[in-house]
Image (cartoon, rainbow, N blue to C red; front, side, top):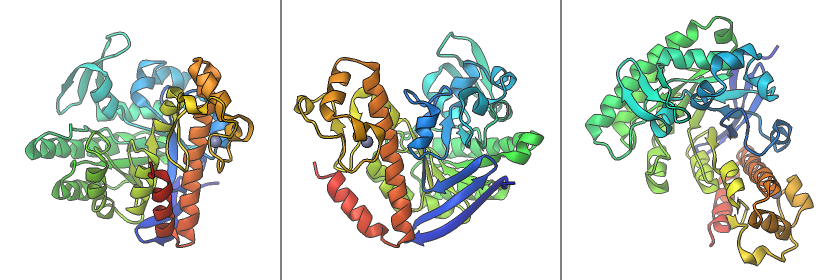
Amino acid sequence: MNPRFEFTLHATDGKARTGVIRMRRGEIRTPAFMPVGTAATVKAMKPESVRAAGADIILGNTYHLMLRPGGERVARLGGLHKFMNWGRPILTDSGGYQVMSLSDLRKITEEGVTFASHLDGSRHLLTPERSMEIQRLLGSDIVMCFDECPKIDQGRDQIARSMEMSMRWARRSRDGFDSGGEHAENAALFGIQQGALDEGLRKASADALHDIGFDGYAIGGLAVGEGQEAMFATLDFAPGQLPADRPRYLMGVGKPDDLVGAVERGVDMFDCVLPTRSGRNGQAFTWSGPLNMRNARHAEDTSPIDERCACPTCHTYSRAYVHHLIRSGEILGAMLLTEHNVSFYQQLMQAMRDVIAESRFQAFARDFRRDYLRK
Ligand SMILES: [Zn+2]
């Protein structure tokens, strides 16, 4: 039988790392990109296509699922894996970030966050304990601690107070998770480092999490408007503050060049809505940079979106056809482009895993940036 959670590093190249996480529902090759399945679906893709694209794990959003269809209902239906037909690992976020960004009338206290649903205005209280319970009801494989993600432009004192509360919530999350019986014996729990762009606060947060002890450690509170330069400056020190023998997960990132720069700085896992959301908005990611498929220059172009891409869309359909579908608002346009983008992201991760194993990451990163950013 597979282990509950086992992380093995196969190779490092500079700070970049490649390895594998073994869990009961399957292996996760790292560096890993997790497509986002917000509401029990990776939008516009069947789960079998997500797997065929190369994804080992997807992400589900606790905030969305607790409001609709509800954690208890998903549990009655046999859990999220069965409900959505995805048998491999699922990571669920804690709901904390989306409560802050999507809900109305938030009130944050030491106990948790009271909020009104963005769907129907109904009132809810989300606490570390309730977040652990919902993630257990969903049957999550990797559970995230409940935390507060402060706005990046707040003062240091406010960010410090927020981080300290998140560390108390991390302790409560640990206790809540551990009381989960059989689920706790099969799933993993990740802590989340906070502290915005401040090296000292990041260090204090990392130490507090390490004292509690987690299976993996996320870097939270980035990709919230600080810009790539500030994010990379923080990633120059933040991953190294976390235990080297555990996976490091940068939450909510990002663009392909963000991923390359973060892997270069020692990050192992990512999630982002960008490949799926862009697929619905007419943007394609390619090795030569992003393309706007609405642009008239694609109207009679019979070449694929990306000559180097191995996805079914690029194998079968022309830029001209995808352009026509997107311009016409056809659902198939979103489907084909999403499949390409999700597949492109997985091919990028596979390429990084390969070059790290072969100690050629620096040359790869240089060539990638030359081609991807040349516009
Ligand atoms: Zn493609």
